[in-house]
Amino acid sequence: MTPHNEAKKGDYAEAVLLPGDPLRAKWIAETFLDDAKQVNGVRNCLGYTGTWHGNPVSVQATGMGQPSTAIYVHELLETYGVRKLIRVGTCGGLTTSIKVRDIVLGISASTDSSINNAPFSPYTYAPAADFELLRSAVKYAEAQMLQHHVGGLVSSDTFYVDNPAENYSTLAQHGVLAVEMEASALYTLAARFNARALAICTVSDCLMTGQEIGSDDRQSSLDTMVEMALSVALR
Ligand code: HPA
Image 1 (tube, protein in one colour):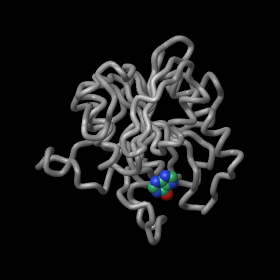
Image 2 (tube, protein in one colour):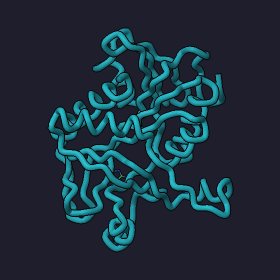
Image 3 (cartoon, protein in one colour):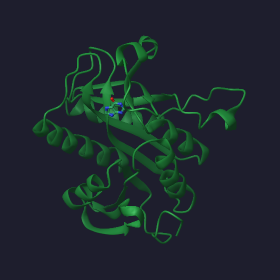
Image 4 (cartoon, protein in one colour):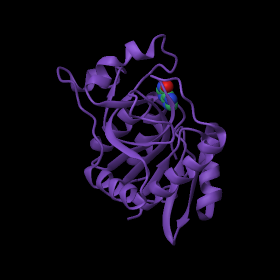
């Protein structure tokens, strides 16, 4: 048990999917897993463990943003011994080549958060995805012919930005494809605990064009992303 998690040691599988939204965690558990049992309900930040094609797997909500994500991820790594963490989330595209419904596999995660400033001073740490998970996700996307991009994410502390095109232009010019709010903390903590992590994000909106995903597309895109994450997590 931890201050934020009532699960006992052994309640989580070695591989955990990480949506931000607690109800999405419930939906993933009920839709994709067999014999799913709720292992955490503290603050309604729901966690479940079940099996997928006979393999144990868990899903734990992180809430929104890096401080919340860092709490759940740190405890999954330190207390529950989790070894593989795959974020399943949404992101906003930062270049016109990124369309809604596309999948962005985050090779790195820049950030405007100060979380890593003190621990890494005087350096600027470069949080990065696990290469094996990334390679496996790319292979899956190619085999399934999914529209996907591999590139940088930026984990922002701010959802509402006044002038996105201007705000993110330098990052976009440096290969950052999309903005979300959690991957940087995930990659940093996975590295700290010598574990593996990957952020798989569906593009829900394009900040350069104002295009947004429709509700039917959102559901089928989420299905595709979860299948991909489960396949990569349990390969
Ligand atoms: N900003 C931050 N996170 C996001 C966005 C965004 O525009 N879209 C989806 N996740």
